[in-house]
Length: 113
Image (tube, rainbow, N blue to C red; front, side, top):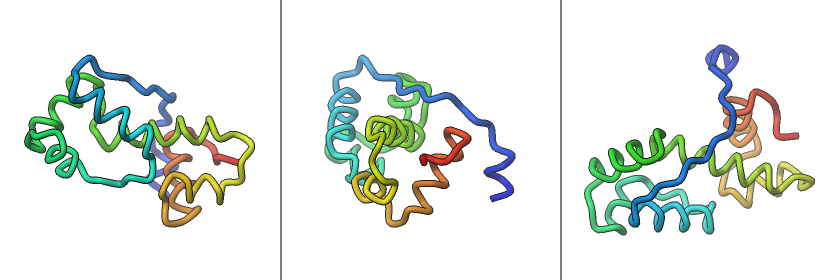
C-alpha cells in the first residue's frame, strides 16, 4: 500500500497497433476481458514466440502487454459507469473487489466508486 501511495498516477491511454497480429490480439482481449491468458499463451495462439510478441506490443503501443491489458480493464470499468463495483469485478475476471480497487487506484489515483 505504501508503494501504491508513492506511485505515479498516469492518465488513461489505450494505444492501438498497426500490426495485424497485434490488432487481432487487442480485439480479442477487448471482447473477452475475463480471459486472463499470459503473454506466452497469446504468442502460441498467434504462432510467434513470447519475446517477439512482447517486443512487438511494446514497440507498437509503448506499453508492456500487462500494462496495456490493465489500461483496457480501466477503460472497460469506465464504460460500465453506474454498475456496482462487485458486478464490474466479476465481469472483468478479478478474483476479488480489493484486487480491482487496488489496480484501479494505482492507475487512476482514485477508487472506482
